[in-house]
Length: 356
Image (cartoon, rainbow, N blue to C red; front, top):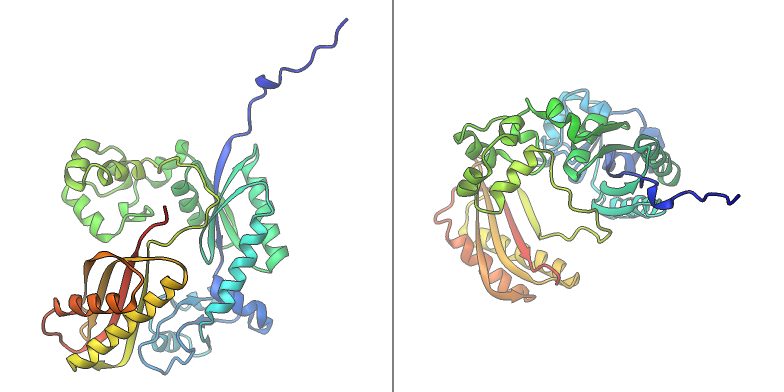
């Protein structure tokens, strides 16, 4: 009697999951890793670390600091008033770059496709039967290899996984699938969706679309007429939980780069304002050219003393690597603002030519 061999083709493959790995309080965690005595204390990273210097803001706050209402983007002086015992530290970009590389290298040892999205987050594409168990392995690996903690969101799409991470933080694991997407997210405002900001939400509101459920049920043809043939239908896909494009192992390629500066005292002299814009334009161009990128558009951001913020942009005649061309275009864009009130912040952003 011949032994029957199992039908390999009949064995169902493991389902494919998207996982979003998001490091907890990343900047603060890196600082605590090299200064363990800070563990458990209210810690803020931002600016040069001096909360008495005006116009510096919180880049990251420990969970202990957040308990006092301290949040990213808050002026350091306000953070000091909320919690005088806070430890303030200067930002150290090189340390965060190095720590991020450690984390991503550890993730690449896993049987997963790793798609890096920044210092402190990455998407994984994995085929497993028990995604929660795999997510637990991810957390353990990151902790062992780097001493840092992370939350892991599990989903069928990037949007579901990233949204799930919001329920998992800090340091937990959560899953969202199409089966429970609308039950969980349907009543929430459209701004709760990754990729929909206040301006888009306002335009959707004019169409009577306020919630995720409204967006999921919207007429895609109507959305296409209002937002365009590509963006309109994409918005409805977001309402349904996002698209299913595969995770890729190429690093995330930035579409732009910017530099901005908040001044300790408002500036009014047009010549001084122009000089700062030119300096910022040359600096950001030098950075991107060093990475082998070309500039296609130049934008200038101006924030006045009243916090009124405007941005204007112009396309270059052709992609360039010349800081002088970018600076000249930035000055031309600045001129389109007309007469400026006292200026609190200036910024220059360049849009980059994408690699072939």
